[in-house]
Image (tube, rainbow, N blue to C red; front, side):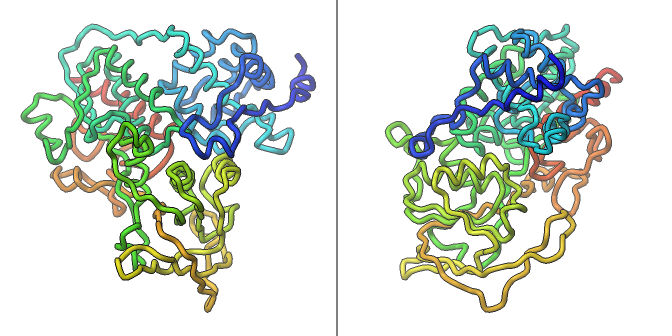
Length: 471
């Protein structure tokens, strides 16, 4: 097929549930490509010799290779190529911001002058992964003979899962410690079922267990055991810290202590990990808000707003102090939220939250903004318009303005260097200031993406395997 013929193939739209139906259920919004769509979309790849798309992939998947195989209908070969670099293709194919990573570099998108017309790499990746999982033909990764070395993985999110698999492959004993009652980290407590079915995450954990990785839940490192105790008392030869960024940030405005104000972390954890939406089978209490305001413009804000609809809210409003162009959320998530009826208020922000005589939220006072000069992030800074205050009636407020690192490990680990934001400081090999202890993912980067965390886990695992071999 010539490049001109490839360019003539239209981008394949992702089949989705109807917005007015899906806003009332927890089923996956995007229902996935058909085989024909996956092959057609993969056929759009120009097979560039310099593979610019790979520059945007944090784990360097051979993208032209797997797309070439998928275009020919050889999905077994395609998923094998993906899994040379990525352990979580079904996850990444759903939640990674491909439009800012691999697809941003795609030659097709550049030729057609529209990143949305780039080859839909993530959607084809998802199809290949789903096909293998649903066929029951997943193979357990080979493990080398036992070395006698033991490694502790703290945290079972994407960084921990990746590090555990790569270290276990070398024959080391691996024990993964998770603070919650279910493993998966942010993949289970943060990302809603309608974006990432939890059965997919459990499948990946099951594969680790089949490799011989031991998983201990309800184990809070820093409380149940200190990091250094794992080495000095429990006989681990090395430790990987991948505890993520789960400490919610607030705006420090009046009224944030009222009944009906939640961090996005708590709100989503109740709904996702503790299944508050399933009232017939779960006893998890949640706040039955009818008029909900979500403060923030990232993916977590979109998840919170869309979850509020599914929990019965009559109105959901997103309030964001910049314009929609500056929103850090994926364009796809913004689009889905709008389709489902979420109301957007841009260039506005909450100034205070107002309560009734029962200390419950009754309204929020907002102020309007205009955009000034770009700040350090490259986004134009919001500038408050004096005298532009106004009030909106609300009964629930969800604060989704970012997360920081939980200080528990740094406070209980003597000699562990952290930066001013509370993130663990590591070298180019993800080694911390303490020999034998490595870290990666959001605890190092701050809140980032699944694929970046996986890249961190892979890099740390490589260094840890070398360290263990030297011992």
